[in-house]
Image (cartoon, rainbow over all chains, first blue to last red; front, side):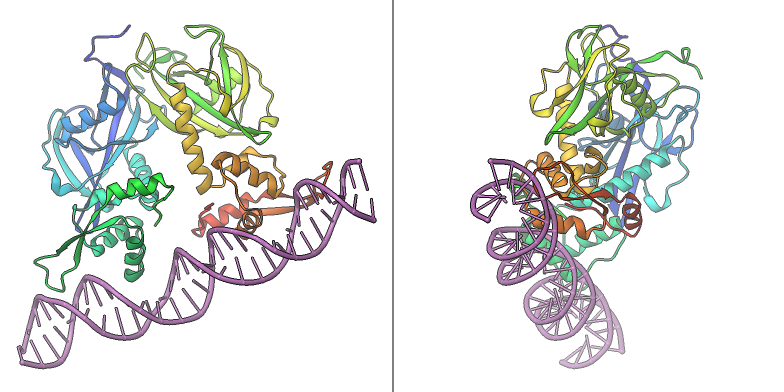
Length: 230
Length: 230
DNA sequence: TAACTTATAGTACATTTGACTACAAGTCCG
DNA sequence: CGGACTTGTAGTCAAATGTACTATAAGTTA
C-alpha cells in the first residue's frame, strides 16, 4: 500500500456518531465535551479521524469507544456529509453513524480527547459545532422512519418489557398518541413478542405481563416475506 | 483553507454512481469503460475523485457528466463504502450515489477517462472491478425498498404513460406479478395520476389512456401526512 | 365478422384499522 | 374494610382496504 504509516489518519475524512437512548419516556442522544482543539469546551457528537488501516465501520466503533467507553454496539451508517464549508480551516468530509442503545447498560467513560460524555434529551441538546445539528436532524428523521418499518425499537428498552413501555417508546419517537388496545392487538398478532411468564414487580397498580422480543421468529418470518409495519 | 490548490483531489476519496434506467421492461444500469488506469478496458460504475473545492453532491454530478454526458439529474447519496482492501494499491473510500432516469432522454457522450459508456441490463452486467458488484447489489435492494414507499418509479418511465406501463415497471423492480384491476384502483385512489386526456397511438389493440404524475398534488398531500405505499 | 388483445368496471369476501366500551386486577387511602 | 384510582386486558363495530376474481368494452388483425 502506498500510504503513510498505518496509525496515520486520512486527513480529509472523519466519523461522527449519533447514539440514541431512551430514558424516562424521553429520547436521548449521547454527546461528548471536547477537551482540546478548536471547539474545546463545546458539546458535540462523538467523532474522530479515520485511520489508514481500518475500515470505516471499525473506525466508528473505535472512535465511539475511545471517547465514551461505549463498546460492542451495532453501528449503522447513516449518511456522509460533505459540504465544502462544513468544517472550519480545512476540508473535512464526515461519515455519520448511528445506533440505538439502552443507556442503563452503559457507564460512560470519557477518554482520549473527550473531557466529558453524557446523555442529553434530544429536545434539550445544547448548541452543537459545525453541521452537527443538521446531522442530528437527519438522524432523527431517519429514526422516525426506520422505527416504523423495522423492529429496531426493541434496542432502546430493557430485554423484558411491558406492552405499555413499548407503546410509550413509540409514542415518544413518533411524537403522537397511540390507542392502547389497538397497539397491543397489532403487536401481538405479529408473533414477535414472546411472553416471559412473568409480571412486573414493585409497581403500584396491577402488574403487567412482561415480554421479550422474539428475534428468532422475526428472522423466520422475514425469510417468508413478512415485513414489520407500524 | 489549509489545502492544496483547488483543482486538487482528495487522495483517499472517490465517488461512484449507480444510474438506473428502464427499457423494454428491463431494469438497466449505466456503466463506463475505463480508458486508462489499472482497470483499462473494464466496464465499471462511473466514478472519480472528489476535489477540494466542491461538495460531494456537486462532485457526483460533475463526475457523471464528465464520463457519460448525462447531466442535470437528481443524484441521491446511497452509502459510503470504506473497507480497507476495497481498492488496490492505495486506501480509497468511495461514496456511492444513485439516480433513476429515462434512458431515452439521454444520449451518452463518453469523455474524460471513459472510453465508452453504455446501458446494461442489471440481469446481464459484465464483471465489475473492486467492490462495484457489492455497490450495485446494495443499490438494487435499496431501490426495491424505495420504490414501494416513495413515488420514484415515475422517474424511470416517460412523462406520459399508461397504467400498464407503470404496472410493468413495478413488476420488473419488485420481481412479482401484480393484479391489474387492483393495481389501477390503488393508484387512481391516490390522486397522483393526472389524466392527459389523450390515448396511446400506434398500438395494435385498444388504446389505453395516458397519465402523468401529478407532482404538485403529491407534495400537497405529503404536507398533510400522506405517504405513498405500494 | 370472428378471434384476439388490452382496457376498464364491477363484485364479493376477508382482513385490517380506528374509535370506543367494558371490565378485571391490582394499589392507595381513609 | 371498602371505595377511589390506576393500569391491564378483552371485546365490539363500522369503515376502509386488500385480494381474487368475473364481466364487459373497445379496439386490431386476418
